[in-house]
Amino acid sequence: MNHKYILLTILILSSTFVLTNCNLPRISLARATATPTQPVTAGVTPTETLPPAFPTVELGLAENPLILALPPSANSQAQIDAAKVIASQFTERTGYTVVTIIPDSYRALVEALGKGNAHIVLLDPYAYELAFQRDLVRASYAVLENGEGKYGAQFLATRRGGFTAYFDEGLDKNTTENPALALAQFAEKKPCWSDEISPSGYVIPLGYLNGNQIPTKPAAFVEGHPTVVRSLYASGICDFGATYIDARKFPSLEDQFPDLFEQVLVVWQIPPIIPYNVLAFSTSMPQGMRDLFTNLVPAILQTEAGRAAFKTAYEIEEVQPVNDGYYEEFRMYLNESGVDLTTLVK
Image (cartoon, rainbow, N blue to C red; front, side, top):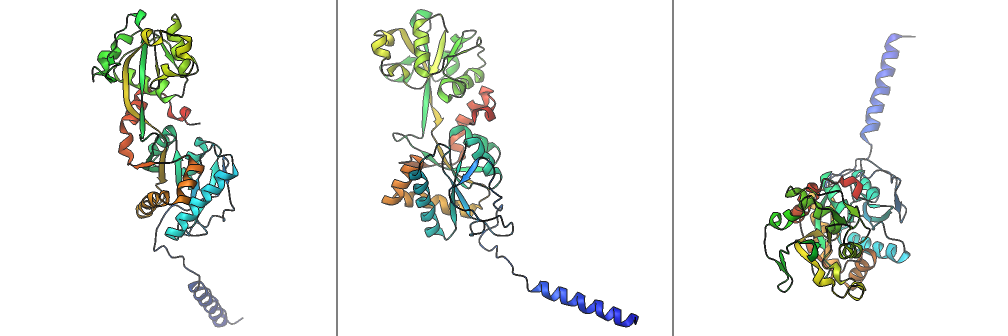
């Protein structure tokens, strides 16, 4: 065959391929650039049909939607429907597509955040901290209970054990701001803890002891805050313990032990540093997008439908704007406890 003819044929075919590719559709990234949503993984159940992953599509479009996660405890159609109301409110107000999922656990939810399978989430304190440490979320709202975003704890001991109270029951306040002074008397004593994941009955009190370099004997985990109180009152089980404020008022305890408040003393109260749930947004959402959605939460809560939806889906009635610094003391004493955070996220 003529060599000139072969060369001419190759050039024509090459030109045709280039021109054809010049006509391929381009995806606009004008609004945002973000980590694309990956296929839904084990442990996360979509409550509606999710589109297949399309890595070049910007976050928030129908092919790569934002994902609103219900809490792992969600187990009713009413919660699913309420979450869809919230998602639709976000979509109507922003133009971004929002769909919903139910994770099997907080551990699965943190993993979903890491894979781009969750963007708008309600986290318990441990799950929030784990996600924050992995740079997966930014806190936007503290969920309030009785008007407060955090709660405290208390160290208890018995009068007959010879301990000194650094808490004034009448004034309802500590008589010293120096925890080391109050807690030093627990050195080489045996604690009763509620359980191995309780923030107020174990983890944060342990963080205070460790942070003040107060060693103790091996602890007894007695399964429950009221049981801590009972164990102290009975004596012989442990020397001191920690509970939420004020576990001594648990129904039936005062009837069972009429002199309970005389015998079991509050030695020192941990100030309110333990958070309730945290409403957070994924760091895979660009800052402008996070700000947009954060600013819409109060507006949705002000509508009757939105308020009812947040109550049903998340048991949220009131929130307070926060940032990650709001949880710094909790973070510090959680770290001081030395407890492996991954074992606390269930």
